[in-house]
Length: 150
Image 1: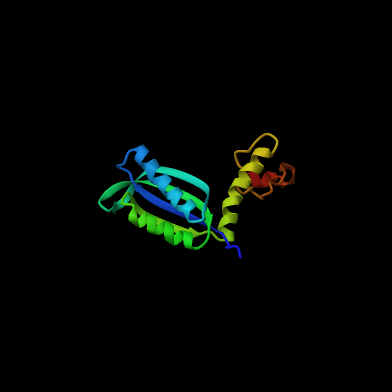
Image 2: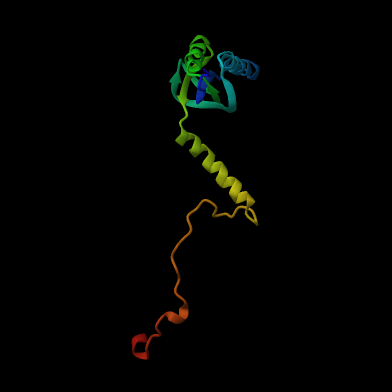
């Protein structure tokens, strides 16, 4: 029987005081942990260095990384164990993406594609709701009588 693979998203924060090569090394180790446990990376986004609202482990900045991956259910627990053991990972969060979340992700990109495919390119009001108010023609307004003008 084949195990069902679900779609997950994991976000983790790497210590920003590391140089870029060290951060890339931490990211590669996380990718390997996913692959080793039966997962497959679908998307990788490096959000970069961001300042924290409050200190985390006495640090004020972190490098944010987001993975979207598929894998069996036990992949998450093994991945999070990897995060706990890596001292350069300050925080992490892994969630299961349901059908509604996946549809919400596709919808904005589809709107951009549709806007780009329309003749003349996307309009400045693309994505905004159009006004449904109808202006009356000038001829339909009643003319003022001479007595009302005064």
